[in-house]
Image (cartoon, rainbow, N blue to C red; front, side, top):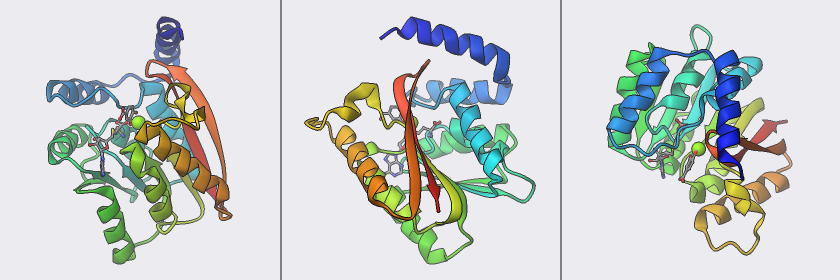
Length: 221
Ligand code: SAH
Ligand code: DHB
Ligand code: MG
């Protein structure tokens, strides 16, 4: 582990490539001031998600796990005119901070935060029968990932992209004997992705300002 080196390289890369932005900075500052945990994606990861959504041409984005809306801002800004985003959050307090951050970033009208357990919100979205989502970002409680994937598969269409955060957890994901429910949740999620014939997937380890972790990338056939 060499966190100092990883953070230094993130600073270098971010200074060159990740457009600095007062609204994004303020979203992080206000999230911290409100006592939210500092577990948003890193700036270069937020931009990575936004570029994936752009490359996909995503018009409808679903996010599971809003926190203070930092990743939400990145994703909402990737939408074309007429696009929309729904972000699901358990905690009303997080959602309130997020809505203020989204408004300040100028995406409050296209990004909606729905409060409640994500499973219930996803079941509601299925019932509503709206158009499919073409980009889904899974980033809520890790124990829930298997169920979020299952429900996400009912909300997408061929060609949709599903990205999941935190699938490496300092390498603990490779420990089949882990007693950590979060690690077990991620492992069960990856196993169900591997067994799902309707998708093609990979997972990539990452290091940087947010430590050692990784993303899973899933394409719906
Ligand atoms: N995507 C955010 C970080 C999300 S942190 C970003 O990168 O900026 C995970 C969030 O998931 C937390 O706000 C937590 O309250 C929320 N969460 C936890 N359990 C949940 C559940 N069952 N349903 C919906 N959200 C949940
Ligand atoms: C945790 C959750 C996250 O979404 C993240 O990016 C980092 C850590 C956590 O629950 O510990
Ligand atoms: Mg995360």
